[in-house]
Structure formats: C-alpha cells, structure tokens
Image 1 (cartoon, rainbow, N blue to C red):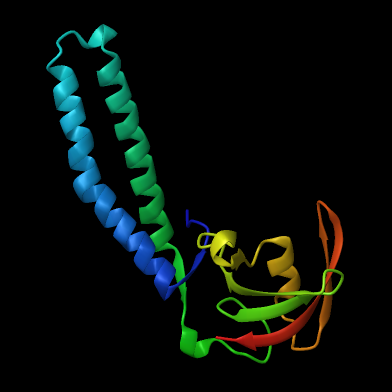
Image 2: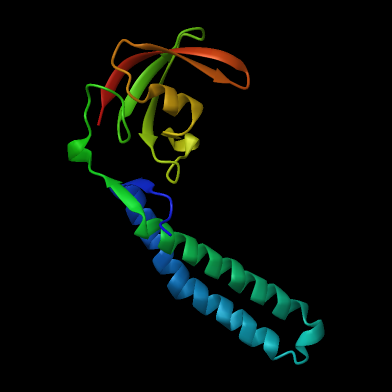
Length: 158
C-alpha cells in the first residue's frame, strides 16, 4: 500500500533527511547507551530506567519509520517550476486582511513543512486552501474559528 503523498520544498526535504540521519545515528546510540546503563542496574522487572529507555527506543523507531515513509512518498516542489501568475504550493504570497488593514506574507507549503511562526502555511489550512489558484487582485473569504475573514491577494512571488 502506498503512503500519502508528502509535498516538500527542497529545504523541507533537506530538513527531513538531516533529522533522519541524526535519529539513525547519534540518537540511536544515545538510546542504546541508556538501555545498556539501565540493564546494569540488574533486575529489569522493576527497573523504571529500563522501561523508560525502551519506551524512548520505541518512539524513536516510530519516528524513523515515519520519516522513511514520508521521504519515500515525497513529491518535491521545484522552485523553477513554481508559477507566479496564480498562487500554488511553493509561492510566496502577500495578502491584505481587509478588515484589519494589515498586510501579511506567507509561503504556501505542504502540511509537513507548515510552520506558522515562520510564515509557512499549509496548502491544507483554511487560508492556504482558499489562496490556492487565486491571482493578484483576487479577494477571498475564509471561515476560521473567529469568523469570516476577507483577504486581498497583493503579490505572488517565488
């Protein structure tokens, strides 16, 4: 069974590859050392350190498997192929909140890379979804938990 397609920029791909390398290398060694140290305490039936280390190992292996799957199912967005005539994944878009009279700039990315703190919003988020396919000058309405927001697309870039 194929996994869900994971949309990534080259930057996002590099971050996932780096994380996977770190988890498979230094993190695995750290956890193995914790298990080894916990085993040195003797009886594992009532050894909290051993239980915690084994749980940490399980979580680590789950994350490694998840990253492996994500990377196998990655679709890379090539910046050279990103169009600027309409909003799509990989675009930087400047919008204006019409009611608040405030401009914002976001990069539209796949859900894996989304990081609102770094102005990277997912194509699956309410605002990201509403922006996909719009052009400069378009006005969109987005229903969010706080109510209806209206945005005007000011600029589209790579």
